[in-house]
Length: 249
Image (cartoon, rainbow, N blue to C red; front, top):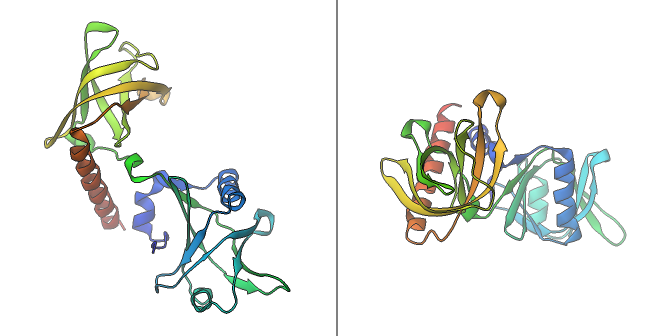
C-alpha cells in the first residue's frame, strides 16, 4: 500500500517527481484511461480497491472511477479522509492523492467521483532514480577528453542514477559531441565511493547564463561490478536526503 503524499517532508524530498502542469496531468490520466490500466485506491487504514478510470473532466474538476456498491473495501475507502491512487504505465509509477470521494449510482454502472488532482507524482523504475551528490563531498568525474587525448577533464557530478550521470562542463573547456563514447572514467562520489565507468555522451544542455557552463547528460555502458556499489550509494543518499528534509519541518 502506498502512503499519501501530503506529508511536507516527503513532498519536499520528492520535488523532482512532482508534476503540476495541467496538460501533463491530463495526458497521463488519459493514457491510464485509454490503456485500461488498473488503478489501486488505498487508505492509511489498510483498505484498498482496484478499479479503472471511467471519466476525466478537468473543467468540472472531477475524475471518475468504476465502482461496486457492495464492495466492503470500497465502502470503507469512501469514508476515509486520505485516499491515494496508484497506477503503472510500463515501468512508470503514477501516484496522486484523491479527495471528496462520492459514489454516484447509475442504472447500469456506479461511478466513484473524486476531485481532479492538481498534482501528480511520476516515478521511474528503481534503476532510473536520480540523486544529487552532496557538493561538500566534491563528486568528480575524471577522464581524458575523447577527442583531445592530452586534455584531462575533472568535471563536477550534478546527479547520478544506475543509468547514467549529469556533469557540469564550464564554458572554457572543450565540448564533447553527442554520441561520443568515453571508455574510461574515474568517478568519485564521496570518500567511500570510487568507480571506474565508461559512458556515452547523450546531450548537452546550457544552464543559466550566470553559471557559464552546460549540463552533460551521460549514459553508463556496462557498469558490471560497479552497479552494486552505485546502488548502495544511491540508496544511502536517498535516506540521508529524506532524513534531512524531515528535520526542516
